[in-house]
Image (tube, rainbow, N blue to C red):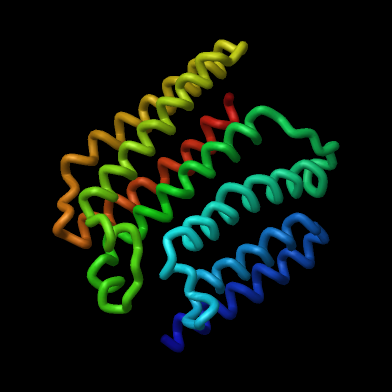
Length: 213
């Protein structure tokens, strides 16, 4: 426990120092909000520990991953790194909208391996209420819906290279997801966790393909 606290403390200091040294208000804002919501999500306190409540947990993850990270980092790069005027572009809207969707999946999926522990601590996650298998397949279906929607958005692109990259990229992400699904053992915490970790790079690749849209 002490080691974990020390790591979090040092990481928080370093990240906040970076926000100050870079003289970037949006970056500092993003780091501050992320630290605040991360604390609210995890710290054991009557008014905190948002992990106990599915709606609050999903909201915290969505605010950080889908809104704060997308918008604040975009403004930071555009204005304070590249020195360009801030202009909302299609890739930003595309990535923000879909990360809102993905954030819900992350919020649901991360609790699947922790069902037993959540039950012991009285945390009523959706996985506890509905069961591992139901939530697992809900997450898979939501991801497939997201990738399918991205393919459709890519098909509307006026740029042929962009259209090809977006359609092919998201089709491959959907294929890789379904390729891995049959190997998941829902009775094994290690197997579920492995699949969750496997899915995270897919989200990073999504950002890459979104930039090409």
